[in-house]
Length: 223
Image (tube, rainbow, N blue to C red; front, side, top):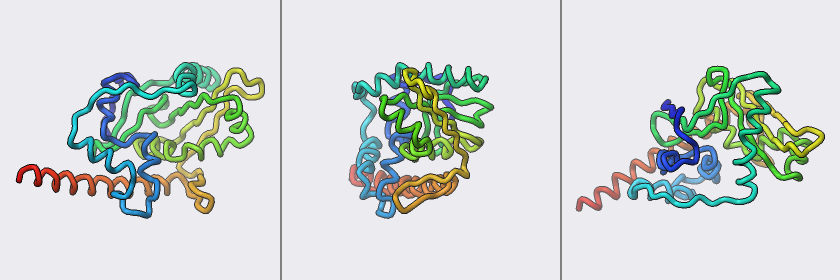
């Protein structure tokens, strides 16, 4: 495990370090159609292309929801820390020794044994999460798996929906462990520990395919 604690998230250095790697927001793409060969996956071409072209900074897409998230995330973390009386730490990027995949955690504490993932959604989304807290986690199931995949000591992930305007529950917290079962489809519900195993197997397949294709195309260049 490689830890980049001082790296500022969403900085140009952060984007460059993450380039060509699988993170919390892209693991879902890797796990799409996981019963088909990884080369049939839409994200595969993008990951392969990154092996042959250097990183170039591009203006990141933003939306009103993303801007709200960026603005309120620190407040959500501060409120969680106040309510639960804990001291949270920021980390820029944590990745597997292979360098293929990693994680940008919102906050960690308890010697990296507990983590916080913050969402700052719209009014309707937040109300929906209040009605069905575990559904909030399942909406981001592979991002949740990414935490347990990259943090071997992680015991508990606290998934937050924060909306200070809400008068019922502005700070909704749903905590999960590796034993928590989550639905990944209408017919499939598995403990997070099993989902981590599935993700690791898919990432091994991805790494092998990338290595084979990189070697193949480099050989073509040499000839």
